[in-house]
Image (tube, rainbow, N blue to C red; front, side, top):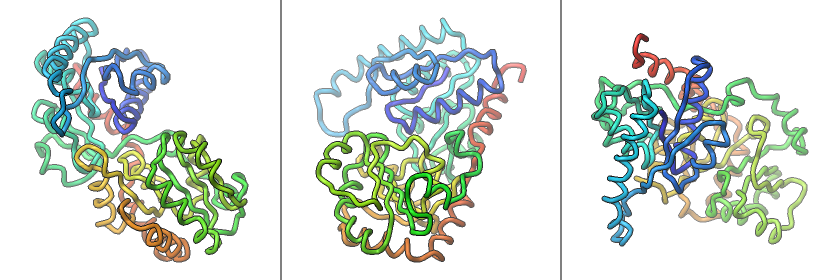
Length: 360
């Protein structure tokens, strides 16, 4: 059984682990457990796995009437988790974070079923911090996590990434041409996630004239929430492509000379594997401000540059233009982030799960 959800940062690692387990154990059965009103209820079935939903949500950090329902949701979720465990009889239970993994892994421990948690971020979420005391193994993506978790349980595995990014990328000039750009001018790749990042879009919109003047090309994934409005507002030159979503990430990464991105754990793991220089604009609106802590973990190793989203657009454009025009600095960032790459994380996590199984 696998539980993780609420955001793509929890769901996609859970799916990658399931896929790697399925490769090693083709006859294995899987059951996912998620929060009944969150995105995992659509994403997991779309990936070919069964899922059950719990009536669970997090505690609001501000005073809210929604918190009054939390004890009832927790009791309901603990009870349903116990029923699911009795019915499915899993050999192991894996949690990748998110509200739903708490009740399931807690009840699995109560029933003496081996549990493993995978923490994507440099600063753990509250669910995984609570579950750590009961888990048999804790797979992490960053070193020095013993300040959060019991040292003897920690295994540095990295974060699972998309399979199509584990192979060698296409040649850069060919990738630029295939996307309709000049092979010789620097290309800036903007990533705001599938929904988009409002502040990144604002910074890029205000900087486009500076980018054009500096001779930069821009491949801009603005997100489906913003694509229509931006398409209407902007008159774009041939050097700028505005996309709601990028399906072919290997080609996009291959073409890029510099990436501007949020600092979600999965994206940072991918940037390390594809060895790309980046400017990280972490979202401050996530639990425990973990994106800022992720970005700081890289910037302290000179593996990426951090730009706070409260920063001014002219400072942003100056930073990006200067970096695009400084190949030595970009090369240094690429070499430093490449040292952090752990491209076979899913298989390493499966190795740890295998050790927990009966008769392993």
